[in-house]
Structure formats: C-alpha cells, structure tokens
Length: 120
Image 1: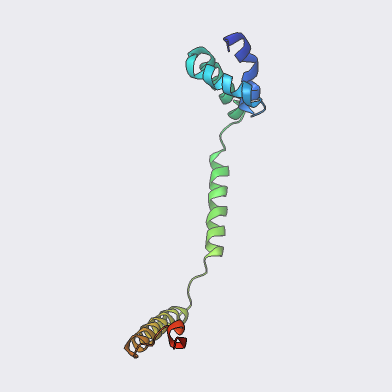
Image 2: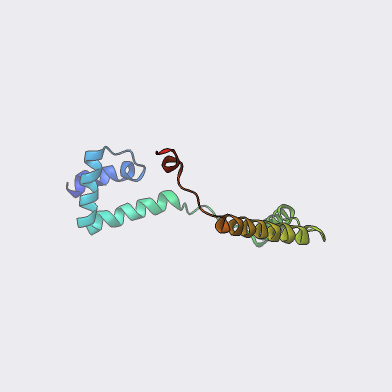
C-alpha cells in the first residue's frame, strides 16, 4: 500500500470500519511509513481530544470532590460497638470448630475404602 491509498483509509482504520485485508495492509504501511503514522496520530488526537473542551473550573472540581466524598461516606457504614467483637468471636468459634473437627476425624481409627469392604 502506498501513501496515496493509505491516507483516505486512516479514519475508517481508527474507527475499526476497515475490512480485514485493508486493515492488515494499512497496519503494515503505518509501521514502515513515519509520515502516514504521524498523520494517523494527529487524526487520532483530533478525534479523541477536541480542542474546544476546556478544563473544569476549580469550583466544579471542588463540588465533584465533595459529592464523591459524601457518596463514599454514605456507602461505608462504621461498625457499631457490638458488631466488631461479635464478628471476631464468630470467626474464632469457626476456626475452633474446624480444628476440633479435623482433630477428631484424624484421631479415629481408619477404615478400608468402600470397594474393599465388599470384596470377599
């Protein structure tokens, strides 16, 4: 592919509208042609970063920060005085029960597998 054929295809390439065969040829051309690659990058910047958009004002940023902080505070309710000890106690009891069960099962005499018990 040459530069004259590549340049009209750059926009379709950017938006993924180029056919597979043309896309492959254009990718190969962009890897070997710095001028077309530069033009493609300029097109990509123009499409993705329009110059008319201004940065938000400090007042808008401050309002957004306050709204996000309020939303985060609302979602994370603090523990009440009795919830934390209860959770720790339940976790400890679960661990104690699991250890006791493993110890009980491991100290019992073993049995043969079911298939071996039926064999004469």
